[in-house]
Image (cartoon, rainbow, N blue to C red; front, side, top):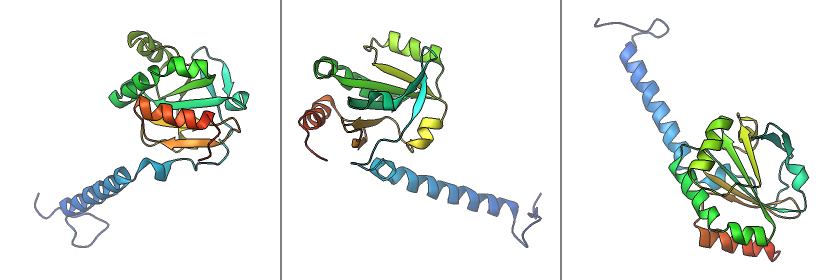
Amino acid sequence: MAGLSCPWTENQPLGGLMLKLKLTTTVVLLLLLSLPASVLALKVGDPFPPLSGTTLDGKEFNFNDLKGELILLKIGTTWCPTCDQQSKEIEKLRGFMIENKIKLVEIFINESKGTIRKFLGKHGHQAPDVVLTDRGKIGRALNVYIIPRVILIDKDFRVYRDADPLPSYLLKQELVNMLAGKRY
């Protein structure tokens, strides 16, 4: 098989072309992975986009219905260990969140309703106020490339924070600042 050439290039062995393609793909992926989540995030202070989704009960949910509420939005999956850890960190704050009327909305990317129900029951997480399934529409609108992702939305329906996961003590500080009306 020596001398096998790619028909659309002159004197370019097929193996060499494949190697270049693999190297190029690897470099691009490494560059994307090296970007901080903030590069892909929504801009702090901007209005949260008008989005809707489907709840576990199959009902349509519109984020605009929560205007005037403080919202903690977590985006993740059931199979991601870091997503599960972020859920545990949020769980530590559920009493604080309920006391301060902070809504917890959780979006599961590309997961079946059965898998989500099983996950929530198995892991003993207190049910979020709203659980949404997403087959990509919300993920594309929010540029979700890295999970988990935690977005805080203030009463003015503006993005207060959009970034990587946080341990409960730092997340609580962000929530306290948002409750106090401190600006970005």
